[in-house]
Structure formats: C-alpha cells, structure tokens
Image (cartoon, rainbow, N blue to C red; front, top):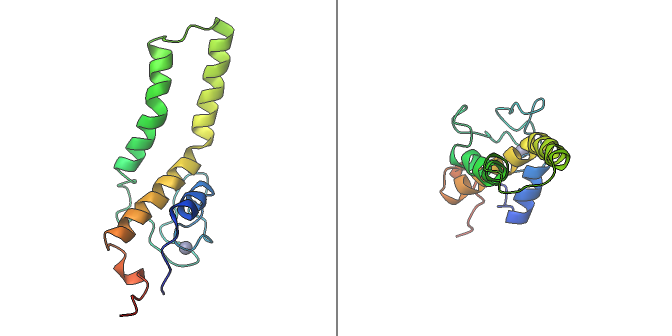
Amino acid sequence: MAYPMPSAKTLLRRGWHKKCPQCGEGPIYQGWIKLHEHCPVCHLRYLPDQGDLFGPLILLDRVVFLIPFIVLFYFRLWHPGMITFIIVGIVMTFIMVYTMPNRNGVSLAFDYYLRRQTGDLADVEEPKGE
Ligand SMILES: [Zn+2]
C-alpha cells in the first residue's frame, strides 16, 4: 500500500498526538509508553529493531530537555527563593514526565521520516510514475 510522504508539520503533529507517522490513524502506544510493534491500521512496523529505542533521537530529546534543567538546578545558576525553586522544580519535572510519550512520538515520527528518506521503507514508497 502506498502512502504519500507526509509533510514535516503533519509528522510532528501525528507524533505529538501519539499517532502512527505513516497513516495518522493508528495509536503508537498500547498503554502509557509501551509501543505497539506495528500500526494496527496501516501495519507500519514502528521500529526496525525493537529495543534500539529511537537511539540518537531519544538521546537528543533528553539532551535538549535535560541539560538546561540540570544546568539550572544542579549548578544553581538561577537563585530564586527556596519555595519558588521547589515549585518550579516540581512543575518542570511534571511537564517532562507528562510529555514524555508525546516527545517520544515526535522522535518516532522523525525516525520514520529518516527511514523514508534513506529508502529503508522502500516497500511503502509511493510509485514514482516513471
Ligand atoms: Zn499507520
């Protein structure tokens, strides 16, 4: 079955909403953060190798979100009152944990994009019409 390559915006939206990057219909998780192996709608295999969990993308995500967090708190570059410090810390931790499936979904969508670009998913490539 051929699926046209979704736009970057569509991919990001699908990823954030935890939907299959290819068809935008199937859920990517079977619970809070456990991935389905295949999309139940279009049967896209989400990860070529289960367990090599998006590799560098996850790492990048963690770096982008965690490093500022660590710098801010661990090195105490920011000196608010103790109450503010604790409240902001709790809120940031909550946001980080709460949005984890969404950010992983975006990583998955990006991974899908790369796989399409590199021809790894050539079997779902749209016919070129040549
Ligand atoms: Zn799908």
